Image (tube, rainbow over all chains, first blue to last red; front, side):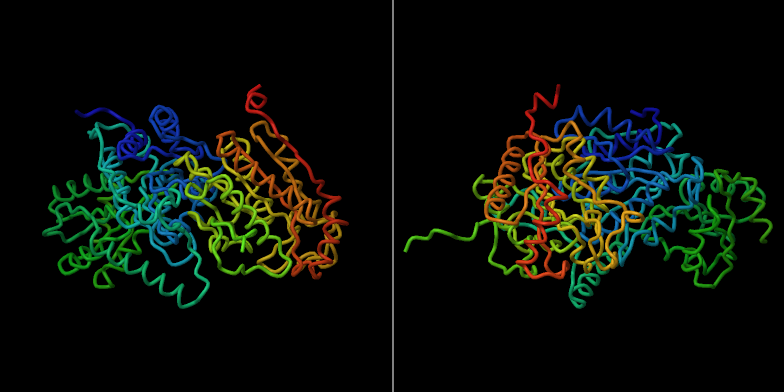
Length: 348
Length: 251
């Protein structure tokens, strides 16, 4: 049965039904519904806990402690708050801990505004925190996907012992759509070989990310990168729309992909063979599909609510074989289908 | 032959990496003894901080986690809320707890988190090479206060136990010292009391231990004890700063 829910609330309920009954967070617009929802629900669930942390720095470190016990836990924030979590995300990756971070992007830099943007793509996919690490990044485009990809984020985090982020913009967090939720989602990963549950009948477990010796550190980083390579091979996800015969491939993720879908239909109605690739995983990025489309497409257009961030991954994927253009709006402005159509025509 | 003294089973036989005259090894042993005496070894999760004791997990035969600088009380909050049956010990130095982690320690205490913090105060940064700490005394020379800490631009030492004692939720706060045998015994008693209270679910417990750092003070171990007694202990008075029943907290 479908119910009408706000993106932030649907995501929260999905997380709870996936067994994430520990939530730590700090208020920031436009994602406050997540913390408010969790503060209502979690105290009523056995073993559940909601804490309004003193800062986002504390939130992510509470998650670090909670997931060290082998249980599912999450935090959420928006752009300036996610910046504060970058230290903790690096530690989670360094200690190989499974955790889910929800990022509901707003305008920036600095305090910016509370309008939707997609300008934290670099922060999510290119590091953000320090050191050699990767974070799995999932980008929903509907309220239904806010729930489905949150469940997937917990699964991937557990499967690979790695932090995973669900990244959306203020639109997706705030808007309401019909959504179908299952009663529960599987949560059966066995973490007993590393989780900190007290050393009863076994040797103590240690969770750390410090390796003083250069060779030991390098070996550990190589081990992490073998894992990241496996994630790239197995977990890359994308959606294609009318790309089979496309001369023009527009690349967009999240809410912008819905605008671009309309633009593609308008262009097709005018006889222009347009298509869309929508990355669902922002890391790992669907490079192979773009590389393949470069065989047949005449040019690519990346469309984002930013000054151009994902466009660099399109360029890297296409490897200079076709022109890659960019059209974007920022400050909280959402591009219209007509603007995207005009942007395509201008480059033909 | 009768054995009258042995290594606690919560401590392994790896030699400590600490400098001669350092306080960490002494406090590690006291914590291990207290864990053993209270029968908590198989439920304990020990949090190592950033600082000289970053490798405390090398020594404790318990579950261990290493936390980012200053964040141990947040990590402890997550550990304890996820598994309330565990015994969580957050072990932190003065750079970690009183500078980088002031928000985390104050709010863990204000929430009354049911875990134990052991706070080693040696008035200086150890691992990074003897820089000024928030606990550095007025006039004390360090590698970043080479002319002595000058209150005109570096302010005054922070008194963490006194600050935390202004909060309503903490159950037990005591400051002890490692300067003589009597105070060593008091320190051990305080650590054991804190862990016992945590085990009984009574709430936030905090033991501040004044400890010597001969290497970074530029003194030998004996001179360090003299310096603690004549300089640190007058600035940081020993004693129980808070010891209240749950009913009093609620009132």
